[in-house]
Amino acid sequence: MLFLKWIYLSFGLIASSHICMSVGEMYTSLLNVKEAIIIERKLMHSLGTYIDHELERLEDIKRFHARVSDLHNGVYNGSTTAMANPLIAFTLIKRLQSEWLNLVYSNEASENTQALRSSFKAVEASLPKLEDLQGAAKALMRLQDVYALQVGSLARGRFQRAARGDLVDIYRPTVSVPLSGDDCFLVGKVAYELGDFYHSVPWLEESVRLFRGSGGAWSPENEGTLEDALDHLAFSHFKEGNVSYALSLSQELLHRDPMNGRVLQNVEKYEMLLVQSTSLPISESVGMRRPNSTALITRNAYERLCQTRGSQPKHYENHRLFCDHFTNGDPGLLLQPIRREVQSLQPYVVLYHNFITNKEAEDIKTLSQQGLRRSVVASGEKQETADYRISKSAWLKDTAHPLMGQMDRRIARLTGLNVRTPYGEYLQVVNYGIGGHYEPHFDHATSASSPVFKLKTGNRVATFMIYLSSVEAGGSTAFIYANFSVPVVKNAALFWWNLHRNGRGDENTLHAGCPVLVGDKWVANKWIHEHGQEFQRRCALNPEE
Image (tube, one colour):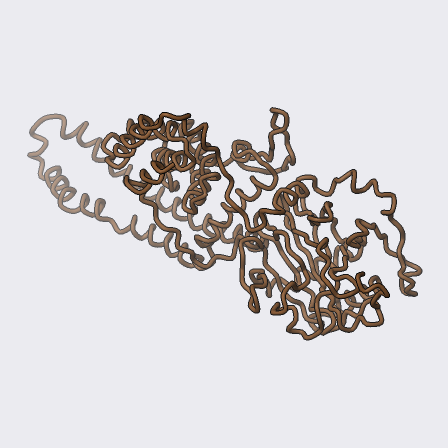
């Protein structure tokens, strides 16, 4: 493989603009994506006004053209004595000296353009940034991976995976749009810029197919062309070891752009490599390798659980799992017990149906909207954003609204725990973004330096997660080591213990928020700490429990 390294260093690569990360937050919350629709409506109104004014200007130009054409086809095309008429001579001179200048150097076109640009600048600060575009592209690749989706189907607006040689719909959206060659090119380019050729190849392949289908026609709003897609795809295949196909694509590109010296040089090097290679073709000896992941050990289990979407028959054959109407011995629940569905015993995970009403869920979402910020994860003693958690969150204090107190009292009745501050954290409201997810993690702190201990009330002993919305597809909560997942159930709440009775973390609570395939996922988390629960959840006689 030394020759692969040599060619990478020695000949021309695609001159790509380095991705500079601008601050973008739109893609991390679907609420912000919805707000973008309002912004584009304003731009559409401005564009409509611009088109109207431009049409009026063009009508004036057409009128002038028709008037002068009539003169050339009539008066000037007749007798040469026409110019002897001083009126005709005057109008000709006046038109050439004045009217043509006014027409050609008219400020009307620039004024119309300036008005459109001013309208654009008025909303420019609210527009998606480069990071948003990259984040949205990465989301499509994430959905492609986790749900084993076919890129060709995604380009057609379908969510399909291959099964026994056929394409099977895993979800049929009521509304969708196909992707253009330029759309697919941009996704492939994002992967290409990251050195992720595993993902760049299928997206650029689809881009080339769509561009070819349109005859390579270019539109002014497009960023890429068929030539750009071929260029990126050829080098992506080379990096994946398929030199012969990289050569074929480069030759096609050279046919379209014969004067491209860099591509000509690449073709010569690819041909040299194929001559030098006496072993199996590189395309057979080197396969497409998926990029490594920080959660590589659990990735297969995580994706399998996300794909099953809460349907694990063997898990639910456990006769010890049950559903009932639960009161927890609390007088307040005797007349109106809650429906409890025990999902797992080790770890103990239960789903409380209809924990809140539709109005309460909407009120909580509304209260949180002004405070939504990019979700962070613990990094030592600090907190930072991360690609493995795509969402926005807000914290609602107990004093934010009387509803917060009602939620705390309801949670306390069901769990028997002390959830008042500081023994329970403020309610955290989360809105997931495009393909929003949270890769496998623990809710409890796993290091003594974790920010969880800043409250000085011990570790997070339990999690109470409320589903504030439904989703059309995806978004399940997957418990990796326990081998089951729970689909999103609107207005229900999921409860589990994070710690054993001896205070040690329960490794079976490793869980993940699966990527949202289609829908707007909102949840609210209440984390309850160890301190304050001394008489609510006593230590066991067995120190190992």
